[in-house]
Amino acid sequence: MEYDVNIVNKVAETLVRAGSTFDEGRKGAYKRAIEKETNENAKWALETILENAEIAERNQSPLCDDTGIPHLLLEIGEGHSVSGEMMDSIYEGVRQGLRKLPGRPMKVLGDGKDRLAQSLGMDEDPGALDAAPILIRRTTDDVLRLHVLMFGGGPALRGKTLRIFHKHNAQNVIDELVDWAVDATNLLGCTPCVLAIGIGRSQFEATSMMLQAMVDGSFDNKTDIEEEITRRVNEAGVGASSFGGNTTVLSTFVKIGPQRASGYRVVCMRPCCCFEPRLASIDLE
Image (cartoon, one colour):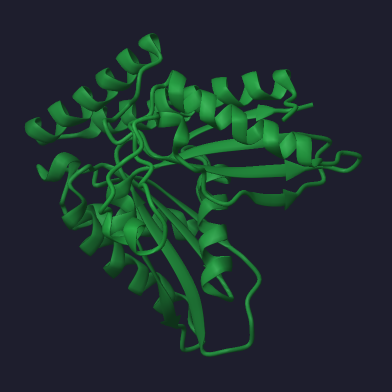
C-alpha cells in the first residue's frame, strides 16, 4: 500500500502532541484557577496537574497512563479534496503516532463476543489500536485541516447521551445539563474537567456536535450558556481531584446544531478529565 510520507509524518507528530501537550489556552485556565483557589489541597492538585503537563510536554510523553483512543475530525475547505490514499496515510500516521507516543496497548483481540468479553486479551502493539470513525466537516476556510483528539475511558464512563424535554424554554435544558454535570463530576475523580456538550436531532448528531465543541471550544471566549453551566457546577464544590474548592469545571464548551420541531433535544455531554480535551491540529496541505 502506498502512503504519502509527508502526511504520515504530520499526523504521527500531531497525535504525539495531542497526547502530551497542553495548549496555551488550557495553561492559562489552570494558572487562573490556581490564583483564585482558596482550598490548599485543591490548589496543590491544580499545581501538580499543571506541573505534570509541563514535564510531559518537555519529554513528549503521555499526559496520562490512559493514553486514549484516537478520534479524528477532518475539515475540508473549498478547492480541497480527499482521496483513498490520503485517508490511508492519515490512518498510518495514527498507527505510527501511537507507537511513538507511546500509546497504551488497548486493542481488544477477537471478533464479536470475544471483543465484548475481552476474552482473548490485548494486542501488544500500541499501533494496532483502531481510531474511531473519522468525522468530516465542510469549512469556508481555505484549509485541509486534521484535528486529533485522544479520548480516555473515565469521561466515557461518566458521559451521557439522552433526550431532554425543553418545554419551550432553553433554561430547562440548561438546568438538566447542570444536574448531569454535577453528578458526573462528583463521580469522575479526575477533576477539574472540561464539559463538552453537543445538542442535535439524533444521538449521532449530538455526539458529533460534542466532538466539534471540543475542537472549537475556547478557554477565553465564552457564551452565556457556557459561563452559566461552569459557574453553577463549580458552586456544587466538588473541586480539583474531589478536594473541594472553587474549580470543579475549568471550562464548558457547547455546540448547538440544527434542531427539529419536537418536544425534546438530544444532548451528549462528556465530562472531560483534567487532561482533556487532548487535542492537536495540523494542516495537511
